[in-house]
Length: 258
Picture 1 (cartoon, rainbow, N blue to C red):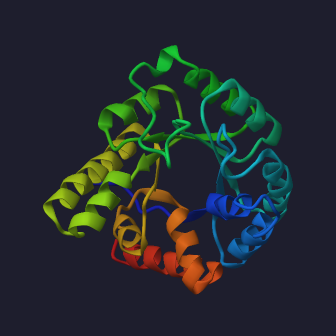
Picture 2: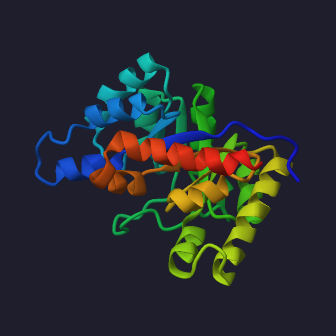
């Protein structure tokens, strides 16, 4: 059991606004306008993933939006791969948060958590240490595995973002209370307990929708969820502000029973 109920932050990933903008090489829809709408809707943070191939946001987006978010007092969570290029960019922008994620050029979206099996021998420790030295909070995107969480703790990362994709896919395909979904849910519950034991701030993200967001909000030590594609997709039908507010309501409903 966890020791306390933490406030639950909603971070919104707006990468796919930039994807739509980039489709025609123009300036519409404007990412800045999307950020302003998200701020009006009361988000607790904005997540942006700067990929090696720049398929979503580009460097100029970071330079434009980072001061805006700082002025508003809303943290930027910059998702990057653990590479020398991305570390240099993070040092220049110096966002409040950096989430280190695995990245493959051919993937449609992030396919799994970081491989932390030999993490100490790679570039990841350098990233964690360097970012901590300049006051950037680091989270590591990991699979719901106790072994991965222990490796993250060894790297002295203050937080992890646990990959909820397999659970969300099981729910979508088989139903919230199905055996496949329950098996994946058990991994998330075990991960929440391990985070509490290891002193890791527990964040979660990937594939969350209204129903799964409400369910995961029942994990008392969950501190943050980051949700992007679903909210942007719902914005086509309801508008971005309404979609964000509906997601916040789903999280609040899940939290109410804790």
